[in-house]
Amino acid sequence: MPDIKVTPLGAGQDVGRSCILVSIGGKNIMLDCGMHMGYNDDRRFPDFSYVTQNGRLTEFLDCVIISHFHLDHCGALPYMSEMVGYDGPIYMTHPTKAICPILLEDFRKITVDKKGETNFFTSQMIKDSQELCILLETFWERMNLKAPIYFSTGLTEKANHYYKLFITWTNQKIRKTFVQRNMFEFKHIKAFDRSYADNPGPMVVFATPGMLHAGQSLQIFKKWAGNEKNMLIMPGYCVQGTVGHKILNGQKKLEMEGRATLDVKLQVEYMSFSAHADAKGIMHLRLVSPEQALKELGLSEHQLRFTCRVQLHDPHSDTDTLGRIYTHLKSVLKSYSIQHVPDGTVIVESIVIKVTSSAEEPNLKVILLSWSYQDEELGSFLSTLLKNGLPS
Image 1: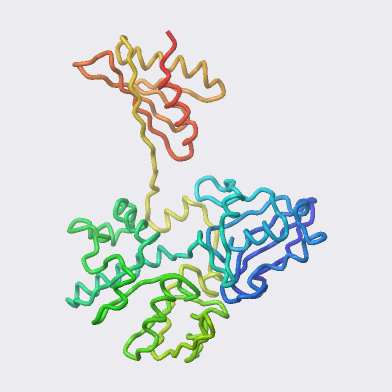
Image 2: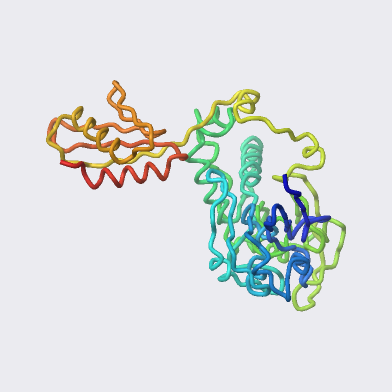
């Protein structure tokens, strides 16, 4: 087995600008190409000097693999493209397809300013947002509180829509509430508009990013920092150099844009509510199979299936039409296992095919196709194939 060499170009001893070079068998692969949120100078980028040749690394790297769309994992891609000339393949890890390609041209459209902000990416802790919303919604309901709760619109709002839609996929405690109402149909929590920050009276606002380095949270913080009646609760770790890190360490005067000074008079509290495991959590991590994990948690596996309807004019009976479909697929898909099951279905891998028609229009057949996400490409191919009709 060839030697594996791992070289941290960023995030070796701190959080941010994640960038790891892995060399194995003559191939060089970069894992992540992130940006540090706490610096305004070249320290915000990984140290590419190790891997460049005459200031360029085009010929050096075989590919770049990005773990996910957070600035500290992919924010330096535009810099690497424009400044050191990389124009090779970039891949993004994907929950169902393992690794899928992404276009470098998309990242070249990203403008990175002196603060390391981009016009394309935003870091959001969606899962935490939903949990915090549920905790506060429940407490507000129990205590009959009237102060409004707002959350920043964007990815969190979209995620909330899908939580409502797929509530049956949530844990048992949440599902039990569905008998009375959908837990994600919040009564007390509304979408935030920036004009609300000037409203009189008490309110609670969830805003991102959590490190206060940019965006909605920083704008609200600037408005509210000077009033000692206000409180800021930081839910997770903040990297050194960010506004969040400074105020958590007790700094009362902050130098903002244009050398303006901001006095911090509001109360600052820290409540660990991070999506990342802490040191103790990491030490207790263990790898188990999906089957073992489901068994230990007492859960059943959820299966996501896609369904498609194809209309087809055919003068034969439903049974004969299904037989013709079976024969047609056998001639086209020679390398696949195709079954004609007695219950009136044809099965190709995970794909189930049925034929129905109405008494009013017996020649108009409705072909029902259903498949799991693993066979998404094959399912799409079969639906297109059947839309073109059956051979005479």
